[in-house]
Length: 187
Image 1 (cartoon, rainbow, N blue to C red):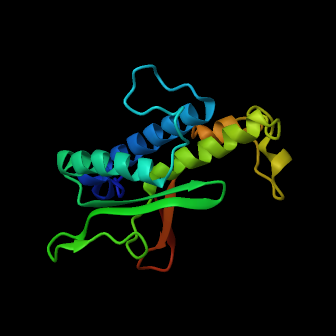
Image 2: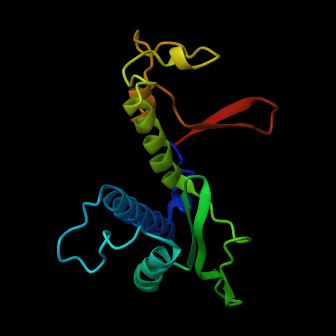
């Protein structure tokens, strides 16, 4: 049986943080798309026809969401930065960077490891390139690279393979043992 080196890193708190960030990103993206297309639901409390969403709207939503989500999810803190057209709309810190010292999260100084949430950004960017006709999900990935990735099981690796973790790459960590030889640890 292989040792699971990643298990301690994926504790309940980290999973909760990832879930909260993912939900927040999805809701913010949905609100932005609705505001752009003018497709807000009739009778909704926020009317997108009155004005475009601005920092005040986003901050109000973030305050409400994180005021509920952090204690509910037993999460210490989070940082959110909303960017539109290359400019920061709002940048906020919620909760604590250090719970024992009761040190508040500072969006300029507090760092959080992004973990799996970066996959959402990658997929979004890839799908935008697909929509623009710049990437074919099922084409040989080597078309887009300046180095070669060998075929896997006799077939070229595609962007779809990479994005669905079916490209034939195994996560591993190489480290030397006490005799100067290398061992591989996989998880």
